[in-house]
Length: 276
Image (cartoon, rainbow, N blue to C red; front, top):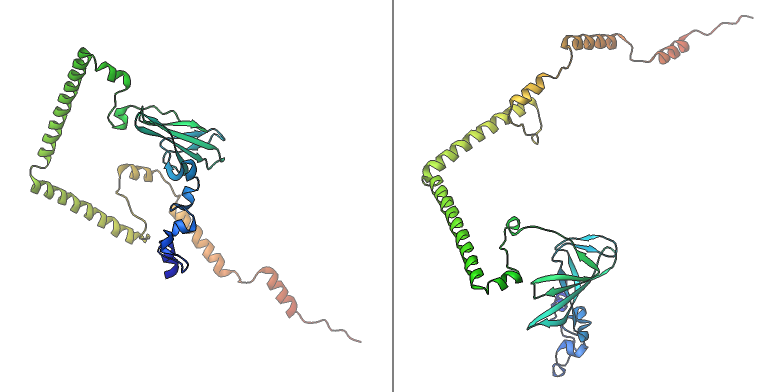
């Protein structure tokens, strides 16, 4: 990229006809600073990069749009929940050009597919996802009751005690393993030397067999030896005998074919003599 092109790409180029008294370059040219992204800014629509928050089935062709797929979506404010804005994201599916609209739901802290598709039903527990389970509206209303609040507090204390015991066990196990750093390091290095020695022996065996460097021999196992013992390649003496017979036949035969020999003999035959 030339210097002039680089300056234009960074919006640092000002043509000779630009007058600073008339305002910025965008104002003089009658365009928005966001260019094509703000072509519908008069309607309150801004084009952004939107990432699909979950798996969605397309209503147009039934194609599955995976979670994390990004689109150029039209972002627009459609309302408010108390003081939080509700946003609408409209995008085009890449499979069949189906228009899909996704809206935010501040009340339930989630996204909703309004039209053009439907969210794939996926059920999992908070324990499987390894995340905290948030209370729903019913559980929050139950905490207004003093007895329910006391029961919830008791359950929380029981879970906290069990988790603390688990943490203590993990800490004791870690301390027992790494109490003597020198001994653990010595044991680790000893095992590593054994592994390197075995690798070197297998590499020498590979070289003796004439195998390529890319081929790595694995450690021998009793199962491999037993499987190899069941393989039978025939009688080696019969193979040697057949090989010697073929070599003898090749050595005693002519290198020319029978047709070539017959043609040569025909050419060497004397011509018939005709007497008058």
